[in-house]
Image (spheres, rainbow, N blue to C red):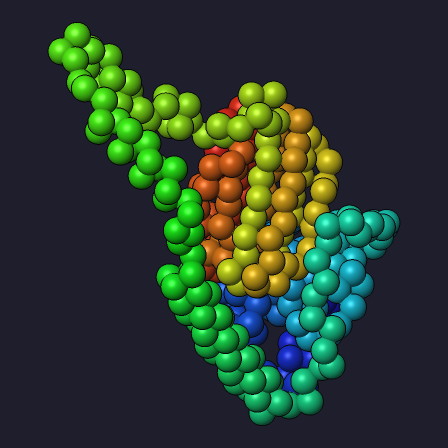
Length: 278
């Protein structure tokens, strides 16, 4: 059974359900249901396949073989295997060696955290250095000369009482009013053409499936700090296995985080609107 294969390999590597939950962002109750074959306690089939690929990939097992075993358990042994093609936008996931033990797993987690802290420190130093350069050398004295000359010339010209001031104030007032288009989603050329342009920035590891105009454009695991983009002529449907790790921008306007950490969320982007897929 597919679930027993996952459980056996997890125990062989000395990992707990909590370890898997922390690294894959799949809730513990879903992991336990997978291992025990309680598929009625899981979301729809498309989510279950994503969970299996995520879990199997983390344990360095053959994910497609386990997905096929799951499909045979649900639909019978006559189900033909799925032939999956890898889109050009598919991200490269970590191909490191399997964990020899639980201690090896924790050592890698600690090493990853140290690398992140070091990267943040280096970035802070670079930003501070660039800021100092801009502060001391960023202003070009020659650039202010034309403006000062124009101000001096204006001060020397006599002001007349016949010059109207009301239109100038009206133009300034109009300049402070926000355009009506900024209150709608998708204020871009692609939105006016009826297209759906979706950009996803990932703050954590997440399984994704993206369907544009009825065609599967992407399906797989995405690592943190990656950005992917998809465009559809009419609509784009996004399914996220870890909604709290996905920050969405739709037609040039930031929508924000799709949901809570570990939640499975499915959204439809079309006609300038964002809708939940039921």
